[in-house]
Length: 153
Image (cartoon, rainbow, N blue to C red; front, top):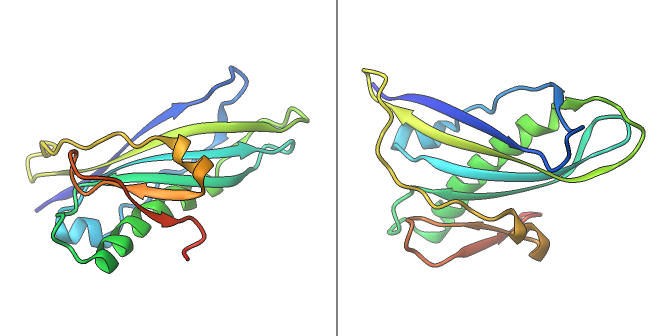
């Protein structure tokens, strides 16, 4: 039996950016079923009311490189959706001004029946790719970047 685990790291760029309400992402079913892990970076803005907006996710996965491109896109999209859905529900203290480019990282890992994490090495994607309006993913640490437009086209 493989159990999902999600590790969260908040990479805030300002000292005043700390969530007051946060929920963890749900491990995508397709990832759990096929033993796929991911490292996702999410960059977003926190508006003056403390709500998140303008999210962009970038993920590296352990999906096998022989997957057809359409299947790879689907798998990566599931991890991106899980990451963005979680961040969309986060709330921050309201300080009356926009806080742009806040970052967080979700590391989706699977555990065996003894609670041990798998030993899959994943690349760390760069949220800077959000600037190019592309969602990038890697199927293995040494594979070339492939992309998918963030609006799904």
